[in-house]
Amino acid sequence: MKNDSLICFRVSRHVQEAMVNVSSEEREALSSIVNVVLSNYLQMREMIKKTDFERRSHTRKAFLTPALIKHFDPRGTKLNTALITDISLGGVQVTILKDARNDMSSAPLTLKFEIVFSLPHDNSPVYMTCEPRRIIDSPNSVRVGAAFTGGESESHKKLQAYLM
Image (cartoon, rainbow, N blue to C red):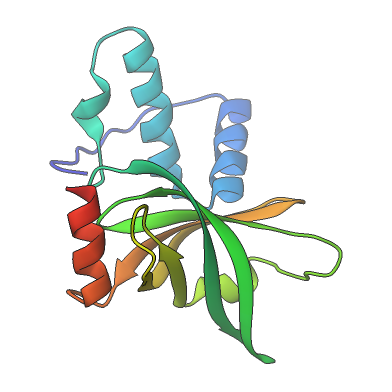
């Protein structure tokens, strides 16, 4: 956040416990959860606009396309199919479905991984290295928000041309 401010206040025990639970489930800092809750409330009251607190430096674009994820775990290299749900110059959000044959969990995705996908109207593959920023593990899927690493590769230039 730009120009952060420090605010101290009291809350009831159940509010505090609920916020800690949400923070744990979302794998976010408690201060981040408080910021989201307060921002949503202020939006609802029309005291601030949604763009007043955007933390991303690149705008996300809804983008549904299949992808292949290559990650490493103690047993070696693993490949998983995934669905990209949105993308920006800075990163990607993917959903990896679980099934009976796939013992996928969020644990291997805590380290860098590679993702391969195609852009619309371009059959050549885009290869990007990603570093996970947020992982949400549910019974049927793992959703990962990841930042691109690796700088100005040919794939990054293709993505930039598509998003501009």
